[in-house]
Amino acid sequence: MRYFIEFSYNGTDYHGWQVQPNAVTVQSVLDNALTVLLKIPINTMGAGRTDTGVHATKMVAHFDYDLVIDAVDLVYKLNSFLPKTIAVHNIRSVKADAHARFDATQRTYYYKIATSKDVFSFATAFYYTKNLDLNLMNKASNILLDYSDFKCFSRAHSDVKTHICTIYEAHWTKNESELIFKISADRFLRNMVRAIVGTLLDVGNHKISLSDLHKIIQSKDRSNAGASAPAKGLYLSEIVYPDSVYDG
Image 1 (tube, one colour):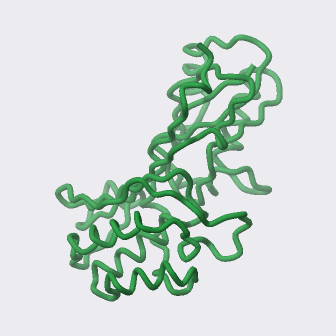
Image 2 (tube, helix red, strand yellow; image 1 turned 180 degrees about the vertical axis):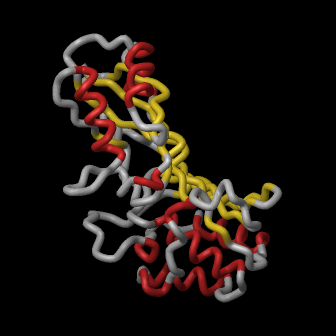
Image 3 (spheres, helix red, strand yellow; image 1 turned 45 degrees about the vertical axis):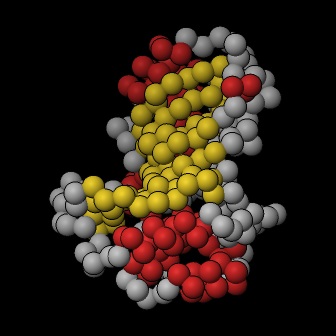
């Protein structure tokens, strides 16, 4: 039987989501917890991979297990076993061929910027005090919706077959001393959101114009875009699946 597991994590202490040799990752810690509690080797498959230091308020992975799981009981045991930086919210049975990565139809990230010094958010937001033209940044965000090839925001030499993504939503909001960038798409490239944020900050600082942004995207050259914003401000916040993946 196949199950989807929904969870969140603070990525500060982890070398990203995906299992790596000689490194502590979210996937390796979760797999170990499931293996111990279910008493057989469990290997999860995540909906995507987040880089070192990136967080998730909602991540989904699937795993296979031959027996019927008491979801409430296993969620309780996992949260007792896992470190405080990982929290499991739900476990749900799905169709045998359901895939946490390939069946996802939409993903949402947000990026958090702290505009004043905050002793509670220094590890989970990008502290940035320069004055920004938020109106111009939102105009630039709207430009993203006019394009589909985002190679200019992809990590160089990434092993992907295509740089085509459909962005559904991209905008900035201000909440007291925080700036929040929200972006939703059918898929994202490696480092894409952080590269977009860094470039939009350049727009907000009037370092590049809206016309320049068009040229950057059309160039398909990562070196023309802005520097990547720090990982600590980035959160994977939503993953959408069709109802057809679920059992009953």
